Amino acid sequence: MPKTRVVVTDAQVEAARMIVDHDEATGRKTSEAIRKIAAAVPQVANGAAGQGK
Amino acid sequence: MTTLPTWAVWVLSFGSPILTAAVALVGQRIGRRGTQELESRSKREEVMRSLRWAAELAVSDDVRKARLGNRELSALQNSKLLSPAEEDFIYAALDAALDVPVYAIEQAGGDVEVVATTDVSATGEVLLPSEDEGRPQEANG
Image 1 (cartoon, rainbow over the protein chains, first blue to last red):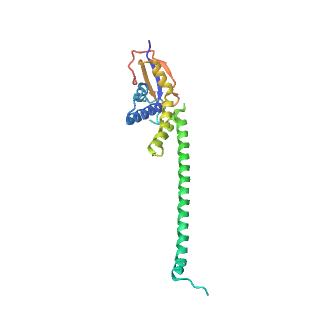
Image 2 (image 1 turned 45 degrees about the vertical axis):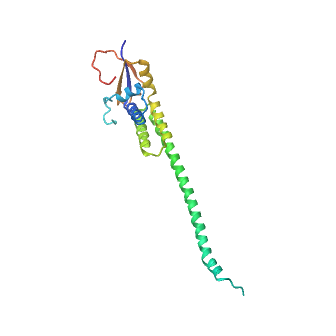
Image 3 (image 1 turned 90 degrees about the horizontal axis):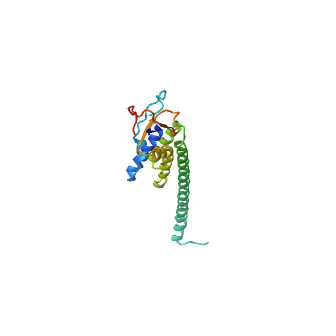
């Protein structure tokens, strides 16, 4: 079975990281899915230079 | 001719202006407190408006708006203008922004590769089965 690829935006990665940071600060458990999104490294798309991080 | 005792003269001479000044001071304090409450309420309404605006941006399909929303939410969180209970609205908005990919990841089980892109045309809703699994992976999974 082919591996499922989920494409997320850098904004969603940023949101996931904020949630992870908050959960760590408050001692809550973050869902595995959000952790996976937070761990993704945004790849700069062609023509996206200068669009932010 | 009517004469007043000396103490009454003193009371009338100094007591009356002192009483007037005290009343004015109390009135001014009450007025100032009212102004402060009004200002505080107005600031609070403005913060809540900003929170609503930032939350709407954060869940936008437009990546640039979503980035702005995240940063506004982060700024609001750092501003200490929100109570801890209100800070939950920030995380509710961030959670909502991740609904689609989180659902997709949960549906896929453990066998999933998360690819993040800065492409402004990406909506965060793209799901592509990988056709060439043997190829080295570019992003985290």
